[in-house]
Length: 201
Image (cartoon, rainbow, N blue to C red; front, top):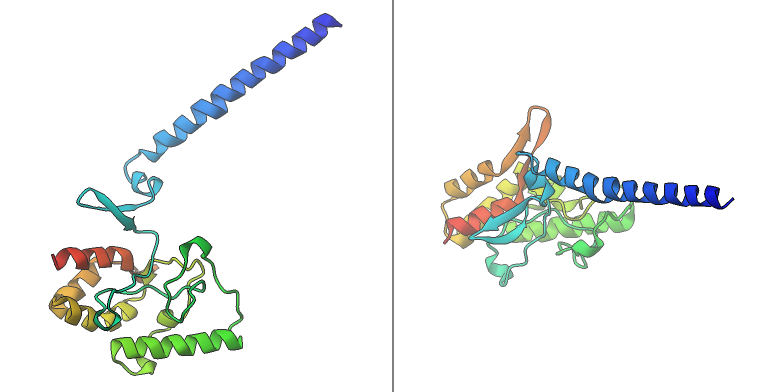
């Protein structure tokens, strides 16, 4: 009886030791090693945007910038967030998520109309010129991408406030646009705002 108990205890301890080494050391080291493969490292590290040795954001997370003076707004803006208190935000990344409203929900329709009017006033255009993605919240609330149409709508304001030529702003938009053929063409607002900031230094 004692020999059986001792054998079972030793077998259990050996299994615990092997599982600790394999699952607690070898597996994490293997995953870390795979994440160092060229092409995967940026994703493994959160796709950080580094400027002058300082992390200024992530190309995967869109946080809508808040201008110090709304009348002189130098930023491109992301899609609205359902977690925002006002029509356009900014949203709270800590509570990101969609509203789960149906397309015919009265609150959603009212929010879309309010967003359309606010964006039209900010950009100095007619409400019908505001693209759909500008007034509909993304599912996550932290989507960094907007449509080229929404970027083009904001370009004249950004050029006017920053003093950059419109052609230069449009070039920066093109440099931060991805997709096409199979994937939808999108503009990354986070990287675009970093590029605008560097161009105005």
